[in-house]
Image (tube, rainbow, N blue to C red):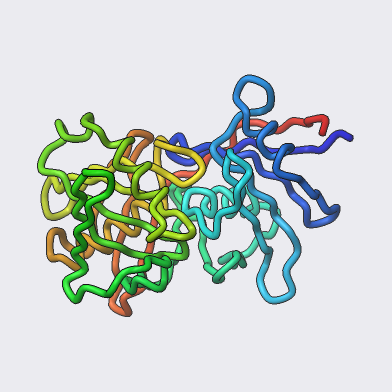
Length: 274
């Protein structure tokens, strides 16, 4: 069976998008892995399925390259809005996901802005099976490795680890990411963000994602890390998050809503036999 798809990318975080609004597409785990495989299939970090919704413009599902599902993806959401913008001809598009609905729009410069809602720093929101710390500073020792971090949920779970310099970004980070992701304290896994504060309006970030490993960029990781750094008074309420794939602007507005702004680019259209 041939299925049409669209390849999108946002800051190098790439997606295979299937428009299921008129005809359903059902994929099993093996098919998802095949599509995401960069040698055998199309190749992508995640697969996005756009489906009809009764109470939003569309609903969309997210699948990681390993076949697992995800509840939120900021770069993916921007890509969906960029894909739908000319098709729906609206001033704002609402997306329904697994745990929430968000809205976004296209700016005059072509960038996409999304209201990411409000961050949740409670352990149960990730979930994280640990007593809540009022200062959002947690200390674990896993297999002899001591790890200090904060937590945040923006629709999916994130851990933030602050580093002192960019030099530390090259040391042992995959090992730490795997330890946290495989810990029973995070029953649904967790995304691990390593960041450096450059100044009050800029941070650098590298994210080890569930089901993907290190990626060029992570929209929810940038959002969660910015929210955590803002809450710790490490940065201002309007900052630029720089990742390997590019930059995202994260702004906390007067109602404590988080607005994420960045590129989302159409790469090509095609068909694949499943």
